[in-house]
Length: 76
Image (tube, rainbow, N blue to C red; front, side, top):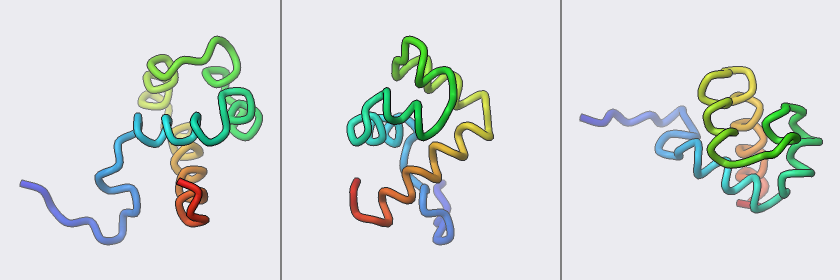
């Protein structure tokens, strides 16, 4: 039973998809400078970053906002 979410630009986009797109576009080093969180700067991996982002709403929001900026500019 899925409901339409016309006002949610991230509807249907998984967090791992977002993270992969950002890492592919920026790389870990640049991403860690843009969004200053330790999981991007100290031994970064997709799995550890996903775990942190799922538990930390403010960090997840920053990642989602960056993804939306890239999407709006047509870069992802």
